Length: 206
Image (cartoon, rainbow, N blue to C red; front, side):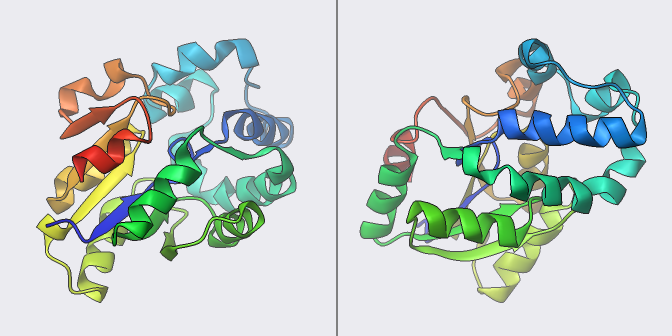
């Protein structure tokens, strides 16, 4: 039986595409890599992280180095950050039905908690973050151990290929959301356990 529902943040709970591009372009000015254009978004959604790194001519191994700076810029743009449609209501419904909710993200914990507070989103018991964009499996394992949870008692909700990789590595099921960053073409070979097109569908699955 599912006890905990873990959510990714960017691209799953919130639509941060626009402010993400703005922050990346500010870094592009400083570190001299290619800026992103808003009309390129659909093309970028069909690329993996290594492919995007190559596309903008920025070495992937340097991403963790600039992550702190990126999320500092992100913080200053959070006034433009919004929850996806029906997300707040869906979280409230899940909490009311007795599910515990958590967030595991590569964003900054301070950014996430400030956003949740400003939006009046309550009931998120735990927010776990790491600047390592490929380290979610370690965070999930730590979460399971800390809360003494079986793999069958947890389900993850995310939008990216790396979310599916992390869940496969830890043996927990994943709900992949179609409204996030990655397209179905990027993730279909990974065979996510569930695919949904609306936050309301999460309740039906759990």
